[in-house]
Image 1: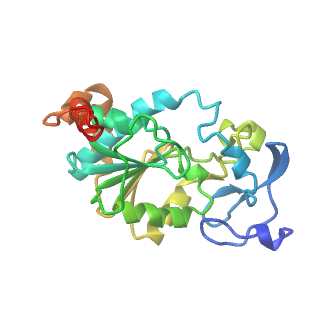
Image 2 (image 1 turned 60 degrees about the horizontal axis):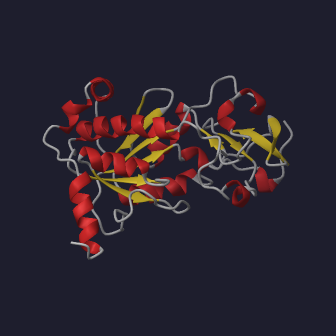
Length: 267
């Protein structure tokens, strides 16, 4: 096949030379090429030069599922902390948006902290992550498809915690055209890379990690090896009887209120 221009020729995950783009689409008024890596399966846009425009608003207006997703993510965190035996450990929500998940987790009794390079922390103020804290789990929900350099972002995540819990929808086979799959996000331009199971396996091997996955949307990288079956059962428990996974934990709703009020000098 014809090779593309050298500025577009390397896979952003494994650096393999890419063949000619399989498709193109209009993204924010510009024609964008899409490529698929034959080695790691990563589906990616050309070099994304439109991100400043795409992130004029960090939360894209078409993301109507943001609140339901955060409620679901609470269950994922509860199940995953139970799996690694760290229910009372610290969790950092990377790319934490406006802080909804951090606040929901703290209300459950989880010591969650917020981190985001682009969004404003609106509802979890006072509970931002600082680099000197010991963290057992870092979450990256609906973030990996935004990463320009996934391997570099993995390094950053692993510098925070040894376990990474993420959600991203795996690309189907055969690879859909941009107009045939909603997850490309053509209307907002923020989704620039799409993973397959072999892509995640490549990253796990690169960083000497173990991979847990439900095969479609939910995935976890861990330094230690854990049972996929146990993780599945814990996720079911978290969905059907979440109170079982917060036994012994105390909601931080009121204690956070008192802490923040004291910092403001109101008590």
